[in-house]
Amino acid sequence: MAARSPSSLAPAFALAYALLVAYACLHPLTGWRDSGLPAFDWLWAPWPKYFILEDLLFNILGYLPLGLLLAAALPAQWRFARKALVAALLAGLFSFGLEALQNYLPSRVASNLDLGGNAAGGLLGALAGARWGSALLGPQGRLQRWRARSVIGGRSGEAGLVLIGLWLLGQLGATDLVFASGDLRSLLGIPAPLPFRPERFIAFDTALTASGLLAIGLFVRCMTRGASPLPVLAVIALGIGAKSLATWIFFEPGAPLAWLTPGAERGLVIGGALLLPALLLPRLAQHAIAGTSLLLATALVNLIPENPYLPFDRRLAGFSNVFSFHGLTGLVDSLWPYAALAYLSALGLWRGEHLAAAPASAQPAPRRRARR
Image (cartoon, rainbow, N blue to C red; front, side, top):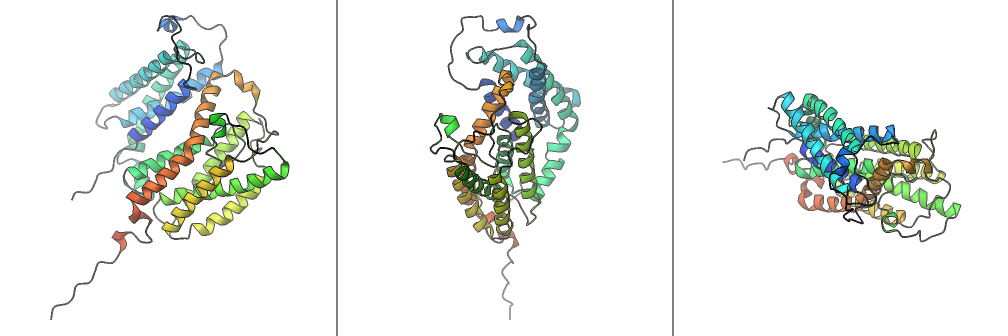
């Protein structure tokens, strides 16, 4: 049977990113109605009286990765100009469709300025993707070669990479808890079941941070090849960096480590002390501990009291894109552990050989009995 040729990672990443952009642009997805205005009247609207430069830059930066991924997903034999033009056109049409849908949401405002910023970002990304996309994300690209060496094969490996990317996106949310995903209270409007007390919050924060660190570390370990801890450490470092950036933007400008509360500090120490020996365990044990830690962290994040001493920066409430981004990261962060648990279950069913102590290909072949 012929070996399966490696596939480009760009289509999966482009689809996942497009879905995230669609949710961010249409958040909160409620209250659909016909405004009574012409459907495309916003296209010819004059320049707005009040213009926020940050919103335009946010639109450009938001669509730049989409243009890059779309260009990288196109056939490698296409010429530079064709790939850039088609990818930019697809990004622009995608933005146009979302802006048109916003016309039917009372909490959103369709804007030709937003469309222009999105199209500009898509064009810049398409130019970059047409130039470097195949070398980075193509079947023989650098990322694909790294993936073949370090990540399990097939669709399960691609799905795992997408989940890691979503976890990192969730760390950019406006929450003061680190490595804490699965909070359904904010998604469903449920109040905290326990009142805030400093001792109680510190205890919950410690256990939540430790279990969250152990869960994400072993989740990464279950989808990687080899015994190197570098992928695990890299994802954890990126998660801490993302949480620090979010804290600096949404909570305490100039204090990116405000999330490092006494409970979080202890949790990182305890979680790290548990993770290091767990990386030496057999794969089946790591798989079981990863699922158990995810369940524990998800239960704790829905029980922990609210922290009243790290308020959201209300000055950001006037930026429409902050509203969109906050809704997107909140949804991803709330649903991530449930998708991760489903992934771990599927990984155990479909790729049980990967979780074995030694893969089948590494087992010695049976010795033939010598003829007399």
